[in-house]
Image (cartoon, rainbow, N blue to C red; front, side, top):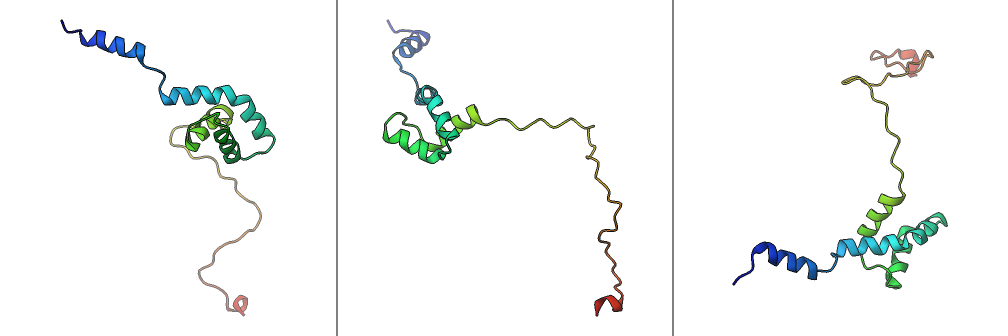
Length: 111
């Protein structure tokens, strides 16, 4: 007799290993202290990624590496204060003379 779809899926999921994305993230998380230290020492992200690839400690792409670094180490920008809906921020006005456009120039100023 044929197994049901649910039983076949359950059997397949127990045999299946982690996906490459999960495996890459686990590999990165295992090295995150070293990566953070190298960043703080001033090494570029490309140099760190290339070195870890040469050592075969990671196998994922540079874009994945960047995504993991940004997720763990980049601080989110400060949230802006909410202003009323549809309102623009106040513009500072200058009390000094500044530049004023005059479409009809004086001839004395041009020479």
